[in-house]
Length: 438
Ligand code: ATP
Image (cartoon, rainbow, N blue to C red; front, side, top):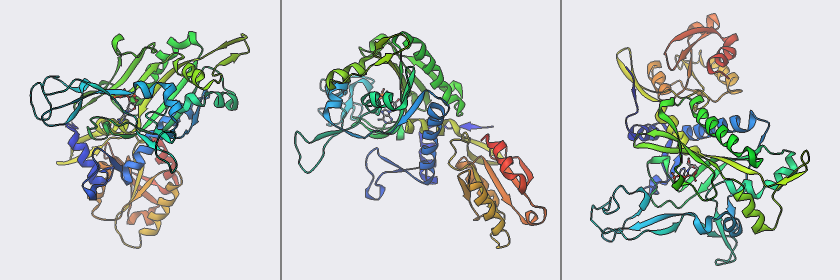
């Protein structure tokens, strides 16, 4: 019998215990709702990013990658509309002084913190952007903003990329990087934090092809999570109602995941028409359009934007992979992570710490390390080491024992089935590749 994760605490505890995620500045009592990614978490975040880049950029010839600045001048966010509109409705409780996002309240007449009735103020717009100052002077003129999304980097570089990459619509510009939002109520572990990472694509198309590509990206993005191991029943694509849509949007849908607290957004896919390019063209005075030589037509492309969160995706992958099962009457925790997402792909476990086994085990570690992130562990009993690797999601363990010195073979143990097979060291790389799928 297998038991999936029932609540978030199981994941939070595992993450802390095994070095995936720590509360930030913990030795100073923690920094509210900020997290640091430890030795395993940083590897997993990198794997989420790389899996996205692999699918969205590497395996296509119509998308290029950029890495734009995090700090930006007010003009960019004036044009994008963030200075005027990027806000959430904020309410205060007059009794306990806590603040909440009005659209997240279940009952607008009751304070969710102290329970007082009719003590919440009217909502006011609270801008979510972090403002700071560049250079040695504080004050207007030196104001800069930390980007609240990566998308503006793609719009302001549209003409640069068009000229230098020789792409033409339909084509996309992708970016992965940190974004910052002064969220009123961060929470649910790494689901909503003030500093987070996004993976965004701006896919520019001829206006008439907008609906077709919107549908294409909705399906492609849902499939990405399925391909990386999230069961379809834990996912859904939820089209926004007409009253949720921004004025320029010709369609928005969210990929949602069944988090322990309910359905929550993993990613949004929006058909943003030519709103963004038009805004930046007007505000900058530069032409941001495309001249199609085959038809002799000049047009401002429409854009489809799939915008995902690296940290939210990591939380979903962990929740979907977490399981407790029974092996030989003993309960084990196992993370059934897709091999591409697992922090380590392989663990090398010499049966004993004796010097006789070390040289061969190190040799295998070094050979596989050329291709994969490999762990090496020679402490504790072999059973305990298997459990540890199961708990951090390592797909394969390779045991080097005394017979290995004689017969030139090692044992590969599979995380999911716990099956063990003996394979010749000469064929090991090939065997590992076959099992991992890459
Ligand atoms: P929400 O409604 O949950 O605040 P949003 O609709 O404002 O999200 P988008 O602006 O569409 O989010 O951002 C795209 C993606 O970036 C989200 O789907 C999410 O994965 C990620 N993201 C946004 N805000 C945060 C945050 N505060 N913490 C972590 N990830 C975030």
